[in-house]
Length: 285
Length: 309
Image 1 (cartoon, rainbow over the protein chains, first blue to last red):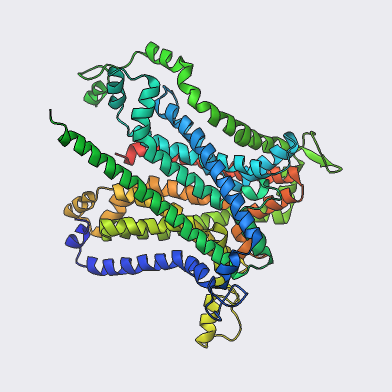
Image 2 (cartoon, rainbow over the protein chains, first blue to last red):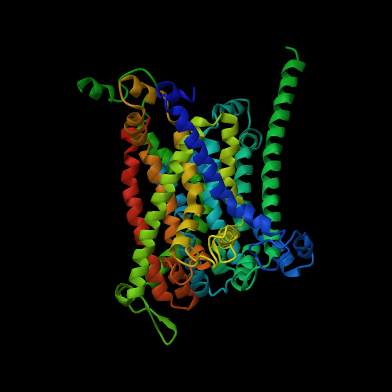
């Protein structure tokens, strides 16, 4: 089916080989830097670069003794959790009226909401910096970084949750209303169970975005250090493979988080489908 | 033509009646439905819209004795326009963004075409996930990894030396404009691939066969049937690559050296040096470029009616 070009084009076999080779090249381009980053975390030399002088796990073990990194990790997680909670609540709250309210210029509102994604982080960063120091008279700090990242993450939450909400069949709620469910019951027993995979995905997105956010945070965090800020300060003086080890672990952590969440969502879906099946077959009419 | 016109008359046939305009207005006036917007409106208003407006205002003020004075002036813009380095950097940034965007689209399109048409669906999903995977690794270290690839002790130089091709490190790419270009294409490739892939994925490939059946060569049917339909996706992908590059300051700082400076670096330096009005003016210029682009992009969106559905 997908290869009907080949049916009509005798040279499609060659075309296919060339394109496949091209695809492999693209993956090389995308993954060489990441492979290099991980590879050099095992390098014996203190300088991050080639040639590799030997294999070692020292950089991983020295991570456990590095208090600065651990402090930065703690702050990153604290900021990440705060941003995730704030952005998910604010974004989900806004997604409902965006989809359901009688808005005349819905697409304009949607464009407005995506503006923080469209505008370079640099501009958002300096703008919030100027606002906080010149108008609010607040020095850059961790809470301001949380607010800045929330501005960045909320649009993603709104987009993800609203697209999930759009595909929701409103007849479920009408049926619930007919059966006497009030607004609160309809929301918690009908809407939420159907929308929450979108909310979980959005929260995950907000968290991973926060964990790696540098461009905006750099301007507004002040003297505190999250992991990206710490890494940046190290880049300026020449990093040690310790930072590579840290980044490799973080990559592993993020992948684990995403895989676990995806599998978890799928498992819940399977279990609820199964229990529904049992209800259907188990209770004879 | 006449039949088309009558077909568009509302309530002309069976089906749900058009809602009454009065009812619609009354429904819109019910304020309760907008309550959910409140937190977002407060956060966006205070920490996004207000700060950006502030930047616009400050770009017309000036500093006297290290204090910001509300004295209307266009001096800041004049300074940027007349200072050779500033205006050259602005031009270079726009040119770099254009070139990097064009390159990214040009290499992403055949890639997505291959992914959609030549890779079996199951593998396709995995391979596509791999394209987004770089987003989950440290942005800073992905940039820095290029120093380890292109640098003096980098992978390429070590390879060349071991092959006996060179004695001393080749400094072709690192700490100069080409290095920045490579890293920008690398950083924003996934953005372009995301948009192009989802658009190609929805394309009705039987149209191509129809074109061939009607006597077009496969290449010609690609160019005349597929490409026009991809126009919108290309524009969207282009926007998502072009705009962030305009504000990029990390990649030039890490791999660019003194020659690779872009507008983002100037802005970051202005603000770091407390040159608020000058930094604001430079930011407004970048924002203006984006604004012009988004207005043009709206026109790009209108083509949806022509090519879409």
